[in-house]
Image (cartoon, rainbow, N blue to C red; front, side):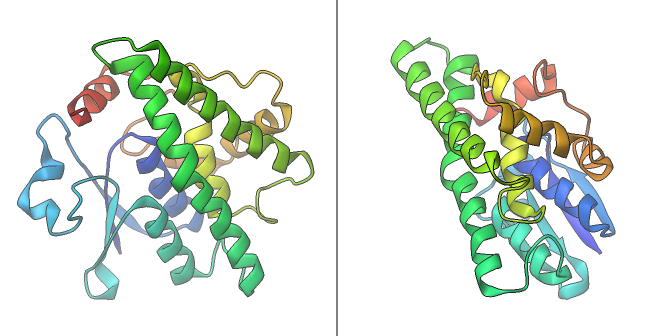
Length: 222
């Protein structure tokens, strides 16, 4: 049994969607940022960085895994799902997973902060992160022009990038003209397991969001 510690964020969805797609049994512990549960001693023993998501694999000696990409890779290796068995195939998936971890997530996250939450509107910062986010989404669109999915068959790389790309509007990032990206987002979002994963721990619309999400992000600001 997997215990998932999460909240309604793109990184949190990466873990819950992966668990749903793999059909694994898991329990959910929703972490309250308002209460700063992610900074409590008990949680820091699971994730020293004090961020969500994190999992504890109760069936593997209470093994804890933090960092969303590491969680996805661990589960893929554990189950043999959503990851090719061959060396080159696995590398291709990991390349696109790292693309999200090192680029799409950080850049779109900063676009969200400066566009939506910063107490002072800084045009340079807003434009800088929106432009870089758009560029990264254009890279995805280019890849998807000749490929149904990012790394051959549907994989954790698609889930990771999708969970961020679907919320482009929240950071004021246009995907006009990125028709291959739009096709891919719609195709993944239609999957029943993805829809279930996006409802963990609560359903959140990526465009309108909810007050709870606003509070969550604000508590994470410096």
